[in-house]
Length: 91
Image (tube, rainbow, N blue to C red; front, side, top):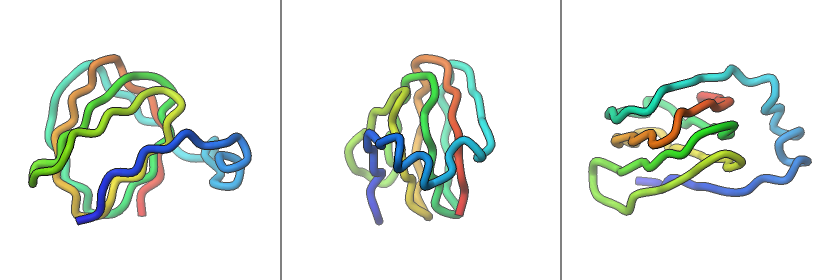
């Protein structure tokens, strides 16, 4: 299984990806499981999150300013520690 990738993108990369045209998703402080049927790329606008892969692997932390890629097929548990607001693109 591929890993979750977290990076600090440049303004140029965000513009190239068209992030500001992606939908926005918000979620309150919570904990839940999630399965990725397709790849997701997310740009974190607000919040602090820890994601733990359910099939082993290290937990991944990310926060505002991070660009996060979740691989297709990932099954994980989200632990939102500070309310989340993100742009996202599936597929």
